[in-house]
Length: 216
Image (cartoon, rainbow, N blue to C red; front, side, top):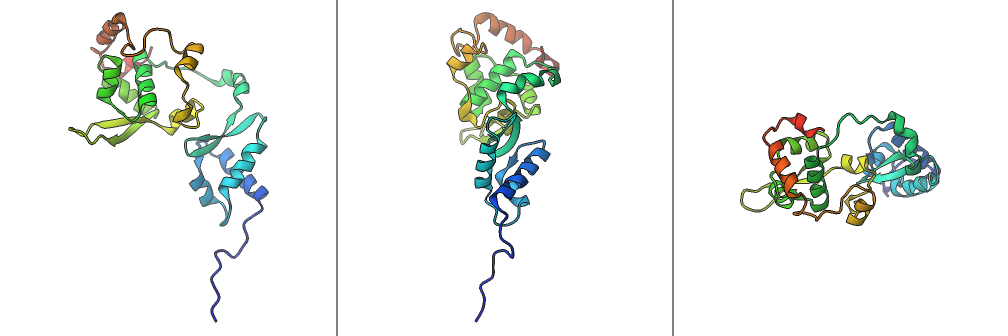
């Protein structure tokens, strides 16, 4: 008579202890950690999903909160206490209007190709703009389109979601929210997106593709 092998020699820790372990992992990490990575570090048999639910609830109303970033998890300062961090933020460079518009088009229309971005904006996209967004790790290359030429597509990254405090692309603000916050004016949308004067200025900017032109 043979004995069936046990999956593990020890029982999984109590759910409270699993919470403490996950809490330690997330606090020690500078980047959001996926459930798979968390599970790999915990003892066999732990229920990562259940522990995260309990941990997230435990931090409700605290100075920091447990948030989901894409398919990963991280601790972040409570939104209403963000003003306390202002002294530690240094804005060393500012995205040009071309970069902001390109990023917005990718975020709201992803996956999108370069030609599609240009069609929406009404002007060509300089290589420096795309390179800057790739360097910031706010966008990345997506799958190639199954069309002639197999153009590459662009999509936003987990770094982008984390920077703007979004759980997923579905949490992007709508047009009304953007206008109410002052991030979008009341001019017609593209294209559309730039008026005649802006297009002339953009054409002048494209004559110099040095990456320094991406900063204001």
